[in-house]
Image (cartoon, rainbow, N blue to C red):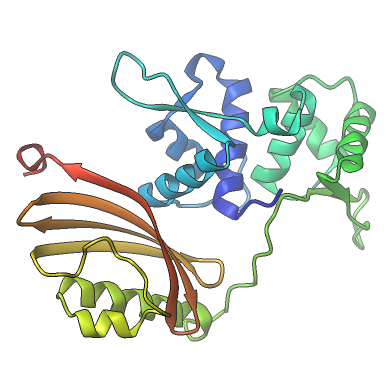
Length: 271
């Protein structure tokens, strides 16, 4: 099982809150966003947007790693993780895996101190016993001891391959941002020829860009290499909608577009 950065942050936060704040679990979307972006017990600290969380929740629900719980009094939806169920993790295993997803590689003494808020461990040796069991299931591994460090560190093995980001705006990430911006700018203007020229083949766009769009506002986030999440609001003759799309980019062209959400907006409330 391989998970990207945002998927790991969501699942780690859900596992953490399941054990540390059981009265508030499952989490509302607002609480989950705050848990993902909190500054304590996180490395790195992230600033994820609403639409990034929404899009990633969709993919996690599709993969049966997150489920939407019964609505609380008919209002806010709540979310619970199913990773522990899918991997058959007990509480101590889940606590250590969550810590590694939330804070990266750590030593056994560090995990003993930090995971104690989620699961009781008698000693650092008890932590090692659980880590060895996780390692036997290829979920974690022990790294070679770094020079100057007293203890070696452990890391999880759930990370998808994530190429290093370029250190300057030029390069793949900058090119991807330019491609995404030009594509949605052309769609907002109804310039079919321009946005079709950016597609790698004939991709269905479910009627968008065919005229009738009176206004379109969009925001996007490029992550990893060659992927982006885009959220946009369109006003057209038939009403207003908020749409979230996941893009796969190849070179300077868009290879795939996956519709994640297509929500009708109440114009009276949105005004």
